[in-house]
Image 1 (cartoon, one colour):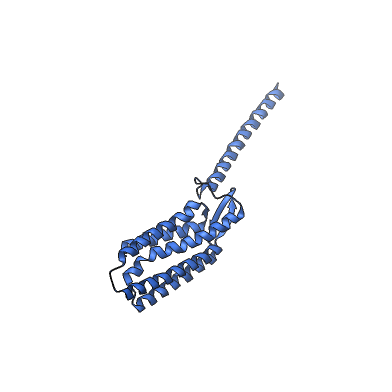
Image 2 (cartoon, rainbow, N blue to C red):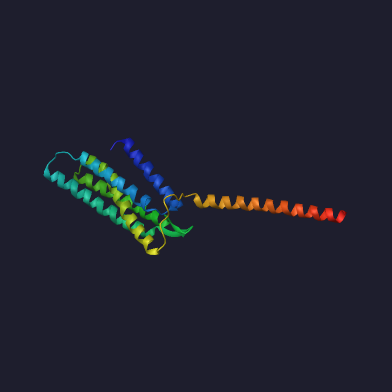
Length: 203
């Protein structure tokens, strides 16, 4: 994996984390699509990184990748239990919590340790590096499975596709603007009524 690819992955993950820590509408597409794309991308990268080495070396690489996959899935399942699922504007939203962040930190540390152990055993460094998107995608997919199941159990509908994170803020702003317009109209009506009463008194 070259530096550009690594930076792209880091930027995509950071964007995902920021959105989920600030909270966003819970949509099945947004929940499932990113991990599926990462798994597909990582799977392709791993297939390209594998070389025609010895059988023992291929078995070792496969074993290290398998251990990483188990670790990623387990971390994702636990992380999915820490995600806050709540109702806003009649549909589901979700948000990462402080406990979610803790699980992420532990998982990243375990991933680095597993990767270092694999290299110490002689696993192909290029294969391990190429597998990063695949492992991350598996972890997010496991998280999505748990979060989605918890969301379905609430009986509240998922957010519609056109929902935006700032939609409720925009709705509040529009309500305030409408309230201000109504207050101005009421003020104008009161002024006209007062003017009419003044005219009758003067007569």
